Length: 186
Image (cartoon, rainbow, N blue to C red):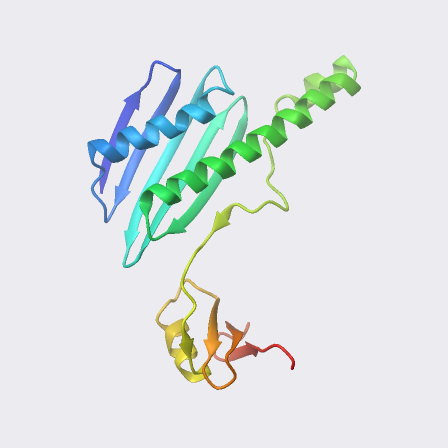
């Protein structure tokens, strides 16, 4: 695990952690350059960035703390730089949404209400905070079960059923011993 901590001129403290991945100067510079899009919204902020490499997937997770709010994003892709870009897009959307809420609250609320609500932490609800991309390959449902078993952190797997040539989904049931199959009609 390699940790890089930098203090930037733009008032954003950044911590970059690489797990199973060396954080090179190019990666660090790319992350900092992309975080400038987030930094423009705040006077002071902290960003914790964790970069992971796992087989064919590159994962970027970002936590940004600013103005009493915490913003979270995680994305997986075959390309680490694409994962970072997706995280920045997710974070920027969350920040804009929260900023709009605060502006509306300031317009509509009384002074007393503003004092109570300015310290609240932004709760993320009904928001897409993680995006995973993977290729769908033609396999049998039995092979899909084996593939899902080889991925203990995944709860489902989309695949093309070789018998029907249709997209199916195999998923773990709550009993953790059996599997369900979602297959489209007709």
